[in-house]
Amino acid sequence: MQRIVACVPNFSEGRRVEVIEALAGEVRRTQGVFLLDVSWDPSHHRCVLTFVGEPEAVKQAAFASAARAVELINMEEHRGVHPRIGAVDVIPFVPLANVTMAECVALAKDLGREIWEKLGVPVYLYAEAAQRPERRRLPEIRRGEYEGLKETISLPERHPDIGEPRLHPTAGATVVGARRPLIAFNVYLSTGDVVVAKNIARAVRESSGGLVNVQARGVRIEHRGIAQVTMNLLDPVRTPLPRVFELVLAEAARYGVEVVESEIVGLVPLDALVEIARHYLRIHRFSREKVLDARLLELLGVQLVRWE
Amino acid sequence: MQRIVACVPNFSEGRRVEVIEALAGEVRRTQGVFLLDVSWDPSHHRCVLTFVGEPEAVKQAAFASAARAVELINMEEHRGVHPRIGAVDVIPFVPLANVTMAECVALAKDLGREIWEKLGVPVYLYAEAAQRPERRRLPEIRRGEYEGLKETISLPERHPDIGEPRLHPTAGATVVGARRPLIAFNVYLSTGDVVVAKNIARAVRESSGGLVNVQARGVRIEHRGIAQVTMNLLDPVRTPLPRVFELVLAEAARYGVEVVESEIVGLVPLDALVEIARHYLRIHRFSREKVLDARLLELLGVQLVRWE
View 1 (tube, chains in turn orange, red):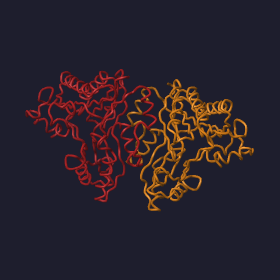
View 2 (spheres, chains in turn brown, cyan):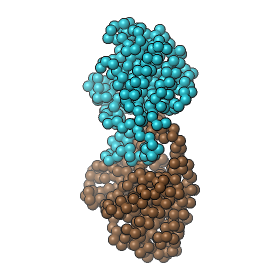
View 3 (cartoon, helix red, strand yellow):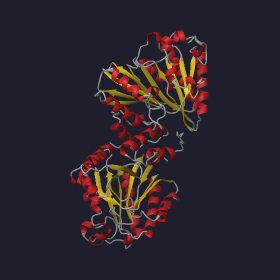
């Protein structure tokens, strides 16, 4: 495995274990692809698969799992706290080793065409694959969500990038793209009050005056009875985890609220852990070159893409 | 590279760059061995090499660098803040993948015999290779250091495990052994007062009422004009870095002293970083399975030894 791409599709299913298992099964049975993680949450009603392999094989696995999701998930019956527009909500490709971002953009476009042609699901292209500047980030594409997009998709500015401007009757639409590694990071609060979580999210995220490269929303996790700040760190090199976490702590303290637990959805790059060690242990001169496991990976010939 | 051993020899040279480079050169030119790190400090007057490879090749590199050190380092002229008994002060082997601790013990004994027979340096066996319970840990073997051991080596209880009971005239004695991965961790204080560092070290280390599996000493780092707590975490799985660091912070605060910087000497295992993330970001359910780079290493067939 010389050339490595990661794919991290998000599906609108976080409750029926047998459906999640069917989606994961499609990836497992694709030759040359390795399923690394399956994360799901019943309140978000969403699951995330992480798999890696050579580009073409990864694209095949992505299509196979998408096809299965279109078959098994009915958006007419879907309600969760996470915004979404389709059964296969978003499929990002991430270059990991000996693959360029441009190749991942091409992969995204190929997959998008296949999804439209074979599954009849219209596709939006986002992040590095975006065809319009306002489609680089997901919130804009997801505006109005599945229910709203039924009507608004006919407006020229909401037309899909691939396919006709009408939603699939049960699978909605799909967003496909290529991006850097991001970190999906959720923080659970010592309160059930979603208003506190929403206030913290507003303070932390870029769109309302917080940290750049951070998306955040406040939600209530019904099955645990507590509020959560759910975040994406879009550029964890420039805006690292500790900076975000400390700001959440500080904002929570204004309401007398504590952080009871955090979670990473999917996988995290080693470089993010290096940054956590640098920050909290004050190891100013520290890098992945000082981590044994990273050096072994390098010795085995894996030259990971370095993100500046 | 299927079977992987690490070797982390410590030499009594931290000032003459050309000598450090000569020692590193012996490792670099050994076939099948990969030099991963060279750390040195002029105040400790000590350097540490970290290299990996198949067991036999690693032993060869260890011997080659030891022979060079015996030739280039004169203990009669050596003064540093770190305790030591020889030019090649200590050589530990660490099993990393598909190698047992027993094999590393055998490697240590073989190397010890070679060092005595070819270099005339008497050898003590320590850690898992120890022949007597009181020689499991280094401080007891190093008692009196190079200068004191000249006399005391003739006492039966201080006789070396391999070789005759007399120091090499310029290279002293050497300690060889096999052990788990440890973390060498130094903390720099916002004071030049070595007494504060010594007090913190006493509070933190096992031998005087502190944390188990922690060795610590307070020293003054002359070239920076500040005090340092220099530590070894002998079992970073059971007694992890954040617990030690937080105790250092708390003890330092008693004297109105802050930690200005920390450093890792040599390399750190990824699992230690996972523990830092768990602690500071409160990610209770987190493990190396959630780290992308660790999963890639696993996919490439490297099954690292798991330490419980």
